[in-house]
Image (cartoon, rainbow, N blue to C red):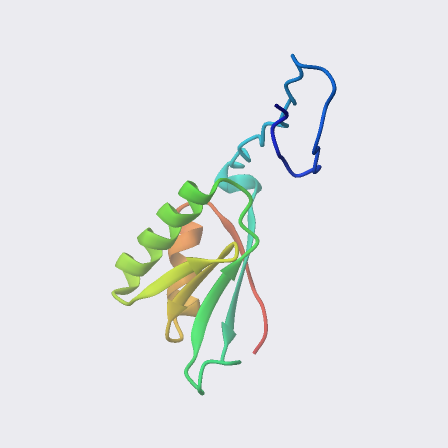
Length: 112
């Protein structure tokens, strides 16, 4: 019997048919020197509370979570990693840019 997948193959007359699934390749993390991270403040849909957003990271989710954990611990605040963005509670742009620069990331301040 045919395996069901994203392409919706429902039936095959070949009894030995096995669909070849495309393997999702893990995204390779670029070295910090080649990354350009954007650091900005966001208040939209947060009931007036500000968060610092770090966007532009190219790499695996595990590496992104590790970077988010480093930033949260260095700033001493909470936050999360969602939708390929790191959210840090509060306005910590300068401190985050300083931390990222020490880790050899290129940073750019976006917005006010």
